[in-house]
Length: 299
Image (cartoon, rainbow, N blue to C red):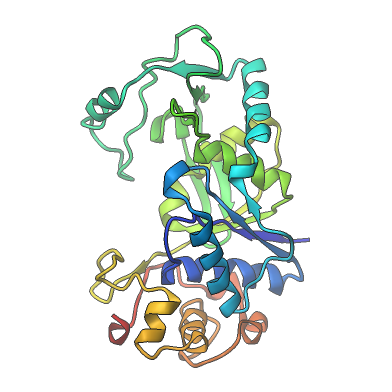
């Protein structure tokens, strides 16, 4: 059975790009007769707030997208993440990283990869173990990782050269995104991850972490981005609108949902609807691979 999930960070309102991802994930699960979960990725300390997460849940509910199980908050899961780090240490997969912020800034001046990333060059890789109170990185093996993307087809990357050894535990005591997302997807039994194309480049790294922890690999689908009317990146002044801002412009949740459904290939034209109206029309083969642009009248 398909088990999908939507996992936002509670740092602000859900904009149209977030809502499109949530809808695609929900429709994919529902069209396969599966279940769908919401998880709050709030491991990033002060930037994440419970009240913002609750507001995000209300916006999802306004579109008819509600979790089939209690919402999991990652800030409640520290003990589980520590167990995962201990497993990786026992397998000799972790090493302490003493690079300072300035060190990393200097590394950031190195040439980019074609995806715009700068791989960590492993300067601390040969350090001896110094305990769990240090920043910790995963020692990645070399070699290509291949996976079948439900929207993009076969993908292939070498994460060791693309991202370098990922940080799993920060010096400020926070667990890093890679660790939390991989551990929780497995713990919740997630079988399908739908997210934006901006996260495609980290998929191989997360697959390597799944392998290191002996966890199952979910299926992946990476959606084209939602852009401003002129094709630029969404921003507060360029179409990064949430439901409240749309309502102030006279756009109802049903109208927003109709545009989102149309952008996923479920409707011939944008028109008000409910999420349930779209289930029978959803198919990955119909979802556009390219970016979509917010209507100019909404900005």
